[in-house]
Image 1: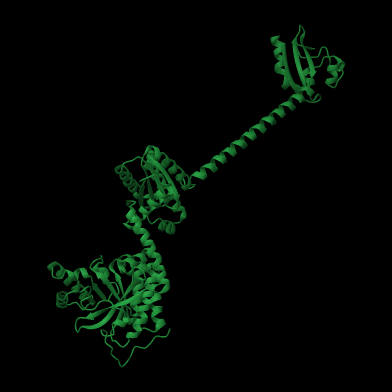
Image 2 (image 1 turned 90 degrees about the horizontal axis):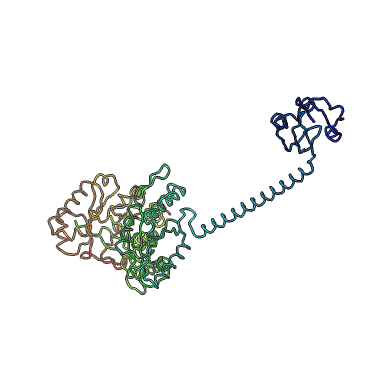
Length: 560
């Protein structure tokens, strides 16, 4: 018991033993002085009982000397307060153990729940990756084909039209090669966003891989589909700001629509064929699948395979068309022309197989074979003075910087002077290709003649022409055929005057009538070729047209 000054007035033996003292020694002592560490724990509760005369009960941990949990009840009395203690350490320990176990169970349940949540998130992520492109977030090929199959299955019963738009970015490889794959990937993401924004809810957009995207639309009129294509072309054309680079690109689009219950793979293939057509027609446009065009493509693919076989077998022949010096009608050279006599198809037009070789990446092989045959043949004509064999070089052949070295090496291999060889290129090659100009300068420096073929049909500037190593302008046959027309004659005269100003010779191609020959002679053209004068022919057929003159100082062979 405590009086109002918190002095002990009665302490039973059990309570005294709990405090580690005798009951007698505690009587009269102030609680707070005897147990200062306890004051902060219980004073407010004791004060409530003492001053407010309100019973108070609470649990607290008593430090040394008790070091135990006690349940305390303070009951107001006439003298002060009566305090009852009960040791609850064991009960408290059990409670804490139960609470700890409960918390552990709750933590385990929370951990298990979090693990399950992470597993579910991983499952959803894997499921998303299985159906979507990881870079752009668009549907991937597999999922697109599944969606397309579902649309086509509905079409059988409900008859809505299904159209696939196949998009391929134009010259995307150039971005990757010049700016790096990180920039290329960012551009793909930007283009994907533009496609989704443009298509909206009208269709399903997907990325097949690389720079290829597809869009599926259902039950739209031809006019609406074409309008959608125009908007897609417009959006992709807009410059894209990728990091520090502003990149302008474009896309080509192939379209295929269902004419019956078709498989997704068939629709994709047809749209891809239409895309090829759009690329061939100049890029940055759309084209519809056409069955006739498809058959033509299959025919072209077959012919490409046969051209590869012909090149492997060395079956490409070279014919030579004589070039006549109009001053005395002597033969001053020949133009080497590739010819392909197909065992089953007969003679294949040069315009057909040369174009095919360019598209198929075979033009370097074809050009090299023709050059080597022509150079070897030129060795048989060493006795003809001032005589050149001219070969044509395609612009595609300048994609490699080795062409000049290859030609000079071929000349050295057989011991032919570079002065006996001439190369013909078009104006557009000179205008577009820095590599081409450097190669031609190297050839010209070695003594090889340089001619601009089909002059007047391209876009060479006069200022640029004066800086190029050109010795011959070949006048296109279109100007020769139009020579009777005053405007045609004026054009021809202008070309001749230009050539004379730059100390160049002129060669009129495609001379087919005596009248044309008379007029070009009057105009002052230096040389001429054409069917009127001599058609292209194998070397052994030119025996009677090429002079067999013996010169006193024959051209020496070069060491290989």
